[in-house]
Length: 119
Image (tube, rainbow, N blue to C red):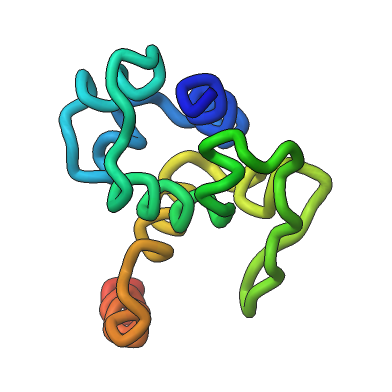
């Protein structure tokens, strides 16, 4: 069940396996094994995936039938897609997914860094 859900969610976000592998900091082949069911992601990896996709581990593992309602956050663009990031271009999605993996105490630093880059 995990394999099918990972593949489904990745496709909903219009991402390639390599994109998700890059976000997780693993080889594409390792991620491919997750989607084919040859191996199962570790708990820390499942936590990263859930944070990146803004869903629960229960949803990714198939113990929750329906996708949980997404939290609306400051700056979050809601739409009729699977979530607010589905209308963003791939690079924007990758930035947002990586941001979700940053520890809370480092998020202000990340935003400041991006603001400086944009000057």
